[in-house]
Amino acid sequence: MLREIIELMDIKKTKEHYRFGRSFFSDPSVIRVMEKTAREIQKTPKRFDVINFLLSRFPDETDYLEIGVRNPADNFDRVQATNKWSVDPGVEFKSNPVDFQITSDEFFDGLKAGTLENVVAEFDVIFIDGLHLAEQVYRDIQNALAVLKPNGFIVLHDCNPPTEYHSREDFYFKFSPAKKFWNGTTWKGYYAARRNLTITGTCIDSDWGVGVLSKKEMFTPLKGDGNPFFEYRIMADNREEFLNLTSFDDFKALVEKAT
Image 1 (cartoon, rainbow, N blue to C red):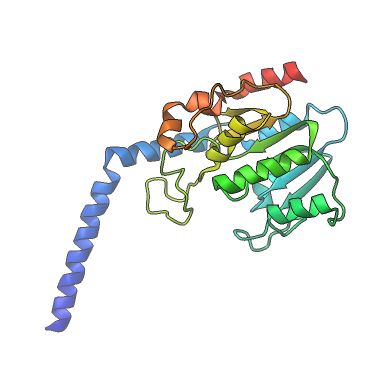
Image 2 (image 1 turned 135 degrees about the vertical axis):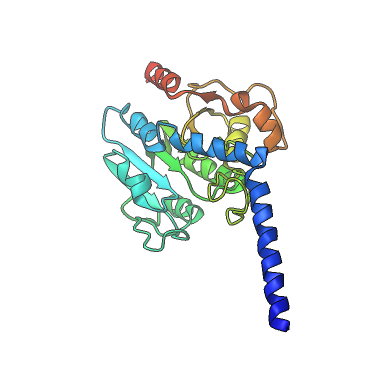
């Protein structure tokens, strides 16, 4: 009798899960998020295309630094620089074949103290794709600026989350329409840099938003004080202005004119 009751309960639970699954995946808001995810995956150029374009603008040897590598085959191995260095503590990729198996904070502290070996003091391009939380991203930007050459560029991935589900704070919360795709709150760190630092920046509308920052007055500055609370909904309503969203072709034209 007990076994029959348990079996009936299991059948009831299975039916409930089935009904919930059907309603979840047929919900218009869920469909909208999945469609935006599919469109974003198909966009080109990719981040390494942007990085390689910037590196190609330098006439001499180039020094490249990548913060947050995960699998080098995804980006680092595709970058065409004379000299390259990589930093990653190995949280998400156990083999972690990088130059410095430490956090970005530890790396920049070591670089400042002069305790790191076989690395230059300044870089032409620094790519930031580490922990996707605003505070860390903003700190990485500040640290990168201190070791960026005057004509150099900081490039950031995941600056343009297409929906609020992609911009969730917790990567491990995957029971959402965005599934495993996660941009975190990187956009907040990028936006804060545009507001508070003496730099200019723009965001290429491709590959989840490729942000580019420069010490030169190369891109349109953010007008006014902006939004001090950095809420996603406000950003989404003012996306083009807050992120200084641009196409890759327009971005290339600006850089070519300035360099």
